[in-house]
Image 1 (cartoon, one colour):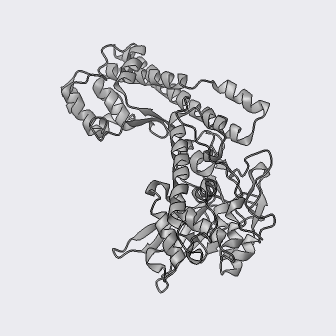
Image 2 (cartoon, helix red, strand yellow):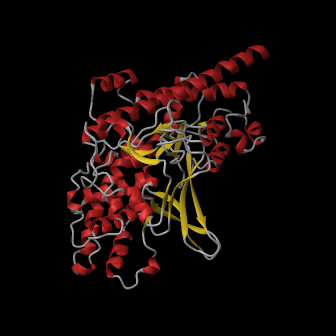
Image 3 (cartoon, one colour):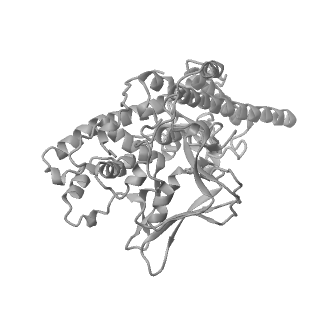
Length: 487
């Protein structure tokens, strides 16, 4: 049985300056080609037996099973009543990055901490990924029965080919993919610098070479499987937020309407935490066990988990708040005298309060998701498409940011706002070089799974824009009807 880090063969691809509500349950895709992705070893240990051996609990009706083309997951072999414990892991089973004060003179631990200091907080998965690599390299690791069951490769975009990264056709995601690829390539050098003079017995990875590919594997394993749960209790009575990998539990698939939930229990006389999965509903025979990974957009699902959720109610598109772009959208919508490029001083003040003006302004705004239109964007449009400062001052920002509050600055203003937003959607849609029907035709012809993921992603982004346009168009028609009644 070999646990050599060098067995990871996926490549990190860096592309620079690229131009560019259905079923809610997702079974974690474990394929990067036409064939299923293998585990790290051909016949890994039985994970259920290992969890039980370590003092954990697994419901007798919980089974590991193949879920079609989507790899392994957990299913119920018989009906399980609501409230039943499905899995319970004692405190020593989850894989966590060790506490800083617990090195006990272990130099390899100190070396690992030194390497981890180069990881930015936003890429927390890499920090725990270093611990995962350390255990993968260690002969006789306590977690080897778990690690050997992990996939050999992952379907996240950092492992896409250059063409498939370009196929995403969405600048914000391209930026994030390139950022992660650059980090991994740079971090490989940092790791080598940190360990080059470390003695073999103190080497954090047992002397094994760690390159961008193995670092990418570890970061992907953690981002797609780890949970951020309550950790050690702090002096103020709160608890720290600790990323941890939960063997067996992390085989539950995602659903926005899950049939199970994670619960943490800590006895009054025992500081150690018990992590459990409990049935949140009555689970039928042959049902997959599902957890909610979070109310995330498809950018994060694809980046961190390697899948896309069709008709994701939390999906959205990102735009940059730019005066010239918004002036162009207003003029295309037939709105006269837009003032996005040259707002009045009182309008600039409100933009500053919305954090859309000034040195530290956050210019990223969104369309889609539960809000349909991000509140800051809606308020800015309402303010910049009126010359009536007194009317604006009668309302607080929360009112101006709410789409559910109808026409706070009058019907004419609201109509101009909605038409500008529709024109903005048209501009955003035209930035995609292909249409949805073309993308669907490519999928029907048969493509690799990574190409299909890229196509599905951009289809969903275009669908978000179209859904926003439909919603706003209905609102314009309703306003027109109300205006006709009023006249």
